Length: 548
Ligand SMILES: Cc1cc2nc3c(=O)[nH]c(=O)nc-3n(C[C@H](O)[C@H](O)[C@H](O)COP(=O)(O)OP(=O)(O)OC[C@H]3O[C@@H](n4cnc5c(N)ncnc54)[C@H](O)[C@@H]3O)c2cc1C
Image (cartoon, rainbow, N blue to C red; front, side, top):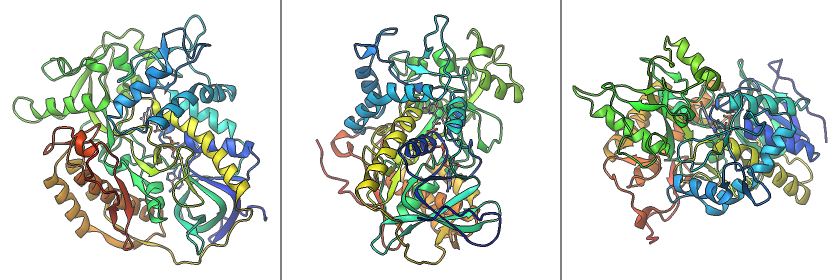
């Protein structure tokens, strides 16, 4: 095999060749890259921004993990793996794959140990044990954290250090999968940002670790990179996606009037330490709503806030407040939140923080098995872009960093095994022109999705969103980074609308105003979306089968 050739400085099309190309450099991508390199594979990381950019670095709350003692539970807190599994299944509202949940939860302690062995520093209590906090939906104190509320930054720092020396193409954007004549994935078409120089990476395995899709919405906690690129790429390559209708809205991002793009998060752990949600009149938002009060699961809290805003006297309010004035040691425990509040002119130790729900996490994604394999040979997916069955209809807080660590290692091992058993050489891709895809203007799309496919949805609104999207798209060649992102957002919006419209019930983080009840008789099942031959997302399951 030839060595990689990186010619991204020139306008000349360039080509590279490796065993495994990892797309994305968050917790999932870098964990997988590191493990794949340990296993002797030639790895290249292709990433859209800088190496440290992505959702991971913004994660605040922590990593949910039961630190096992000899008895399989946590001697300090009385927590158990069974309790973590049970909490995950409860949050997932009947749609988790119970085996996937158990295998990820059980592998958690070893994955965290691995990260610590690579230098990750988590916060400790005065006795020197790992400090643990509690977040919404957790029945125990099991969320470990770093730098107070800067867990993601520490995880990212550690993984960037752990992968030092691996070849990386920063500011390069994966456009499309290259396939062989028989449909196997054998590489990627890539653009070097910002001048969009085209290139190809030929690889024996392609791993998508491209994160989430928060930029579908006007208000989101996700950074600008989170445009659903990997999901769109996988659908176009022939893979299927599931649970797309379940977008988790974080109940509390900092409210600043007219804000767009990434909104600073006010981590749930602030409520874990005693802060409470109040409306403009000072009345508790969560009183009488759920037995866990302010620590109820995210969908419950987000829906309660949305209802309270809609029922405000004199019309719709645009935010509520998080009163954290009684939290002791706020500055040390939540330095990131404090900095964001200070930048907005708010002192959270003296006054309530204005907050609002925002798009936060994609519970669904590219369908994979428990080792990150998609249905398309040569194509793998891991992290937020993937749907393993861990999250079901709603993710339990702090389970996604855990998933990235556990599944990142596992998918690397699966790729190594598959490559040892199968393809010994890089295959030649079928020649093809630059792909062309329907593209809607981003601001129009974000407005439509926020208005009609946000926390509350109904058939009428989603029909409006679908028809406006249909008339406002233009077929566009994917030869700029903007076009790649906008095409991904457009395809993912259509797929999400198709799934959300068909699910005529409310479940997990999917709330239908016109079908407010959960309907286990018809809907205790995931929906799968694929592209039909003309590139339209269609549901492929016999979706109305009675499962009672
Ligand atoms: C504000 C915030 C707080 C959070 N807090 C927590 C928490 O406390 N605990 C928890 O468990 N989870 C938390 N989450 C969720 C968690 O951070 C993410 O789910 C997780 O980090 C996703 O990791 P990932 O590796 O899958 O993706 P990311 O970290 O998002 O990385 C995706 C990578 O893919 C790259 N990429 C995207 N498209 C392309 C393309 N076309 N070509 C090349 N590269 C591409 C990006 O540049 C990036 O490097 C939080 C999320 C946010 C936004």
